[in-house]
Image 1 (cartoon, rainbow, N blue to C red):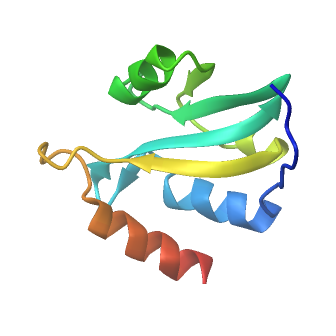
Image 2: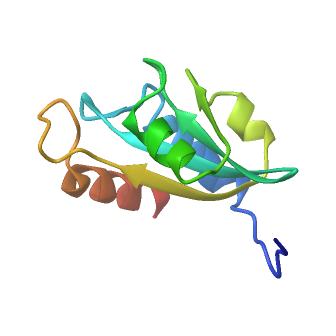
Length: 110
């Protein structure tokens, strides 16, 4: 696969997202979070403090490389991050709703 263009998120943006999701939770509820990082090509890093999740399996089934990590700090702060992807499980009350996640990130990243 050929990459025609790739941009890197600013370090301050990465640091803010890491800070918001430090324990893999938003307002005390779980959030599935992936960072796309530069490696030999690209790979996904999943913030997974409790170990691999259904998000890990979803990415693996798609045939993409994914590494679950208990923490992103400081590892992710030392990488080129191209994007973040957030997942929720709206039918599971232990998971944050996207309408809790988006306003938090929007406020912190403003």
